[in-house]
Image (cartoon, rainbow, N blue to C red):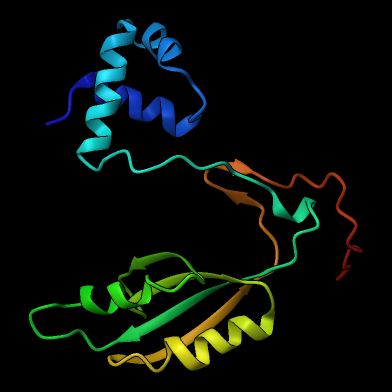
Length: 164
């Protein structure tokens, strides 16, 4: 069971992972030692698994291609979807992987340096996994919002407006 302090710390870190234990202590009415101990406990229990920085790569010179791939699979006896998911998540191109309800079973967020590399991944590695019965690839063209943060608000948008 998680304490109110644990939950409050998680909410604070979710908003801004740069907040120090001292600042969290002030925000929660706790002392710094309690906060550090709680964070350590959350790490050990596997609840707090990492920290990430949100970067708007479209404002940099980094060249890459991202895609969302819908994957249909035949679940394995006594293992369900987990065995196939374990196999898929091992690839470097896979950034996120989710079990879904609806028209497809798994959603795979992928990234590669070029369109050719991403196509090769889908063609040669993902679609040939035993149990994968179909894929549908959707290329990500622009990020407007990610992780609750608005990336683009029209400023510096150099694309030509399309008029109906």
